[in-house]
Figure 1 (tube, helix red, strand yellow):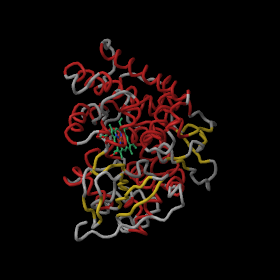
Figure 2 (cartoon, helix red, strand yellow):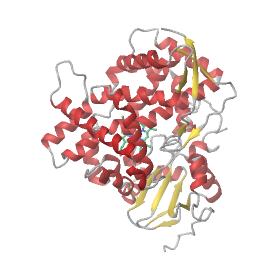
Figure 3 (cartoon, rainbow, N blue to C red):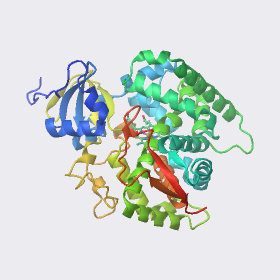
Figure 4 (cartoon, protein in one colour):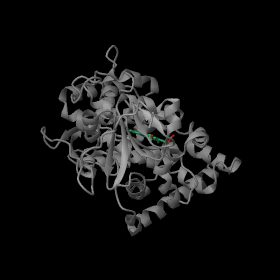
Length: 448
Ligand code: HEM
């Protein structure tokens, strides 16, 4: 042990289950409590497995440093998924040069370029979902409806075609994969479930359809930079993008977006409806934005209240609370020794809830982000999209997608909570977000 190493505290927990129950109930709060009680490093037992927790602003910053990149790897957490699909590698599960090679292939497809000139399309897809599901008088299950909307949008923007008939299969396959193989909150036995097997087969069929469609796109095919770049890499450099990896990579946008974007937009709906003064500002901005026939990315600079409400939602309702890693070698973090091979939770969102960074942290305050306050710009303070080499590749795209979608919904719809004192029910699997039971009523259409 190095001279400066200090003893790392172990979080108290129940025999056998350890801290699984507390963590499963409210993961964001669990990691904040651990940080408050034990400091930036502690160890925790979850269902018999020990993990070290690195938390707080230093942990968030560490992810982006050279040492952080060298000491942390993602491989173990995604290996099960890679094997399950007979692939050789997947973007979130690679590290170092191999990760860089894959990220370079996909960079353009996941960039703002994939959405920047297509905002009117995002609006049109939002409109067709509103007309189908969010009818006056309807009581709408928010998360489910958002999952359909998000898949519709990502399908069209990133793969060239909307695939609503596959939404249920994508949802089911993604939930099983994340629960069983990535976060390991559920036993492997569940992969024998015939419902999962059917969903997996359907997702494989979807992959083949997408690849076939883009191998010979018709004249009027919509752009799909990501799939086109992947198919080209497969043709020109099959060592980097073999057939079995192509199959899994083409469904990447669905897996990456279906929960994260649906959870975040659903939480936004709740948070804004819960704060009437924010609702008023959001509506006023949305109405101004859509006073124009057609919108551009530049127009999104003029909606600080909607942007602030989205950022505040991502602070208080993070859907990616921690990043899971393995230590590649022995290292010391904040005086604590971490051993090679240890499983780690890097709790990057802990500072979201700390008074030192965000005064009155539990207050939904959408003006925190404008200068001079700009509370999120303090080092290590704000990480809704993760940190370091795996930081969300689709973050700009996701921001634009969510801003346009939510602005359009609040422009067109008069939404209401079941009652003004309704408190959001939450779920934690496969990722933390509003419960599937969260519903709102469509009081009427405000516009259109
Ligand atoms: C609210 C929306 C979203 C949130 C909160 C979010 C969050 C994250 C986080 C925290 C990571 C890093 C995981 C890690 O380090 O282990 C990540 C990675 C990633 N995200 Fe997102 N994401 C969102 C939406 C999207 C969307 C819409 C797409 C694409 C359509 C996307 C594509 C990706 C990709 C490709 C990666 C892997 C990057 C890599 O490993 O290099 N994300 N996301």
